[in-house]
Every structure is written in structure tokens, then in C-alpha cells.
Length: 156
Image (cartoon, rainbow, N blue to C red; front, side):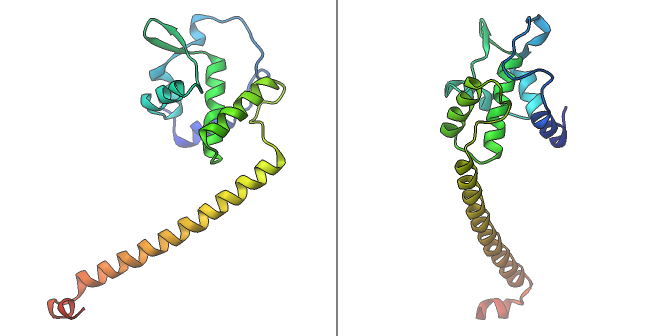
């Protein structure tokens, strides 16, 4: 089983061949949904959800889903988009643009889009910092109330 660091490295590692370049496919090139789930640390439900939303299209052999190298590369782009905080709608568009321009192995991002996403993430970080501080203050009050004598608690 892969650790978080090795999964992240797998996502960021350069591919041995240019994106979109086909080669002969053998049976060993395919992975089951369970194997993909374990490799990327995703639930089976998440993989099925991506398929339902049209983001992934694994090959089917009866009811069995098979993920080839191209489908796994697409999943890696989806996960990278999620890591960067983009919505699934934005990720779908970026993945499609990336696949249309097969010379680029990363997500298709415009400079303005990068700056907009940075601003969004910074706002979210500020909001999270405020929420964390509020929760810490609430927790400190709770601990103070737990340590107060019954008379002090009744007065408070």
C-alpha cells in the first residue's frame, strides 16, 4: 500500500512517455477498480462518481471496470485539479483542453486562472484560520469550565 508521500510522488512524477502517445496494450497494462483505488488512495465510490460525471471512462469487461494507462493519466490530472482546489466542472474543461493539446502533460491553465485560484485559496486559508481560532477559543473555554469548581460554574 502506498503512503501519502508516495501517492503524491506518483501524481507528480513525469511520465515515461509523452502524454497521449499510444503504445500496444497488453493485459498487464490494465488495473481493476480495486487496484486503482488502493494505488491512489481513493474510495471505489469516488472512482464510480468520476465515471458517472463523465470524467473517467474505464474500459468495461462485463461489470468489471478496467483502467488502462491513459485512464490512469486522466485520473492523475483530475486529482491534481482537486489538489489545486478547482471544481469538477473546471477540471473537466482543463482535462479536455490538456488532452486536446497532447504536447502538454500538465493541466491546461491560463495565467489569469492561476492567479484567480491563488486568490481563492488565500481567502479560504484566511477563513479557515478564523474558524480554527474560534474553535480553539471555544475549546479553551470548555476546558476552563471543566476545571472550575461547581460554585464557579454556577456563577458563570
